[in-house]
Image (cartoon, rainbow, N blue to C red; front, side, top):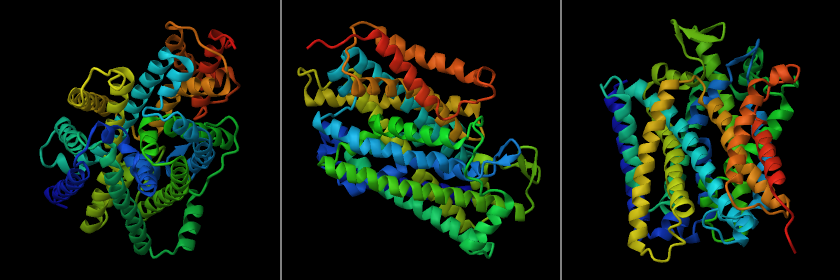
Length: 501
């Protein structure tokens, strides 16, 4: 398929996004950028959040995990254990965190830490969000940009760094003015294209293999891909670890994340925001299951084409297409051109929501939480806007540098990297919010809180590295986030004192 043809669809899609952005950002103010004037439609927010949460990682990496080998068995549907854990985490967000944020009328959720624990905790929490979201967003961006680079732009002679700079420039163009107000609409549009692409690709492969859903599940089970429950307590994917890990990941990466909550608190009322979370949860579970089903179909389809396993590699004509390479390779090299176009549109629909919201939320958090432009009454609306645009551009440069680092690492399964990173970077946030909500104790002024929040991930990294030797073969998995939060909580408790009165 012509790379120029595929690129023209990418360009056309961006023009559509830019048109929506220009329409929705008319008469936009700083209040529109930060919280959408608290007038967002909850249905649009819920649907758009699907695209932000899933991103290109779910679109490419989750299907690829199905055929990855863990020991002598396939991962299969094991990731769904984590997804089931999400349900419990989202319930905590809807019933505990959302009412708290609305009661305090927050623009940045980290203002809760300032009101409850003081300025140092507030700045530390915001800093860890900035670190966490920067790494998470750029890892997601790298995955999709790398696919576009390999299958389209390499053949056009465009270097990877230029591809990255161009895409970041596109995102800047449609987010720099409207912010949250624009993203609520663009994310809804992009989520629609992404899910439509998923369903079309799945339906086409089923038809090519002459399989109905029942027959497809039988073949998936016969191949060994239907495995979902892991009962080995020492394994990284032990079901209890993944359920607990999934719940804590949902709380930390959604409920304590300014990007995700910025959209939720842009809704008019607490009740609408809660409806948003419950709707989002239902769709999220179904969509993840569909992506895993698609992954199993892709592996079986390629086995029918002659692919085979050699060790932990999945080879076709000498090329390893396991993991993140599977779906792009099938869509662009083995399916008709029309399906390749649908894949590219769906892929970039998965790319933009994970990047535009992150860039906007990081800009908001840095301006509000670190620079304090909303607290400085001496700054005019125009001065705040200039500061915001400068920060927005600066984060785009940071994104570019981080993506180049991921290019240097170039791992076969980005979703594993993202969840591992989350265990270390979101842990201190979990500990801070947990301490504030679950205790009535106070923290002293100074740099003790920051020190604890920096030392806890370092201690947990060492623990994770040697866990098998220390705990009779037990390997720490996604529960690292909870352990990190508990270590932070314990450190804060030791530093704290009883509240007077």
